[in-house]
Image (tube, rainbow, N blue to C red; front, side, top):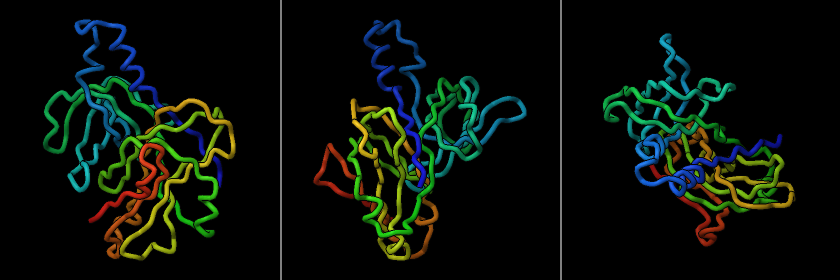
Amino acid sequence: MSRSSLLPLWLLAALAAVLMACGPDDVDPAYTDCRYDIVTYRGVTPGGQEVYHLVGRDNEPTLTLLCSGAKAPEDSQIGRRVLLRYTPASALRGDTCRAEAHAVTAIVSDSLRYTVRPLAHYLQDNTPVKLGSLWRTGDYLNLHCQLEYTGHSRHFYLLVDSTTWHADTVHCHLVHNVFGDTTRHWRECYASFYVGAVWRQPSCRVMRVHIADVVRPEVTFRDFAK
C-alpha cells in the first residue's frame, strides 16, 4: 500500500495568533463570526459559485451551500472532502443556503479500506494520535486529531477488518504508521473517510472504531450504533 502524504492544518493556530495580536475591535469578523465544517466539494455553478454539500450530523439531511469568495484547492475533484470556513448569508435551514467562503483547506479525504492480509500486519507499527473528536455525518466518519510531524510521508487511513464485514459489529481501525521516522512537534490534522460500504449493510448494527489515543489510552475504541 502506498504511503500517503499528511496534510496538516494550522487554522486554529492562525486564529489564536490573530486574537493575540489584535484587540477585540480589530479582529476580522471572518475569523470570529464564522463556521468551520467538513463538506463535500460538488463543483462550480454557471454563475461561478462553488457548491458544497454539508452532510448533517448522524442521519440529519444534507444542506447545499452556494459559496462565493475563497476558492477550493486547484486539484479538487468532485466528491472530495475539504474544511470550509464560511459565513452563511442566511440561517442554515431548508436544503440550500448562500454563503461567503473565507477559506477552503485540503484535508485527508479517503474511503474505508479493507484487509487482504491478517489484521496484525497493518497494526504492528501503529503510532498513537492525540484524538480531538470523532463524529459521523451520513456515510462519512470525520476525525480531528494531532499527529507528530516528521517531514516525510506516512500511512494514515481507516481500515475495516474484513473478517467482521458481515457481522453485526464491524471493526474498523485507524492505521497510522510513520515508518520509524523521527517525530517532532504535534500538528493539527482533519480527515474524512467514506464508510457507506459498511454502514449501509443491513447486517451492520454497530461500527466500532479502534484508535490508539495518547490523550485517553484506556479508551481503545468508539462505537457508532444505528
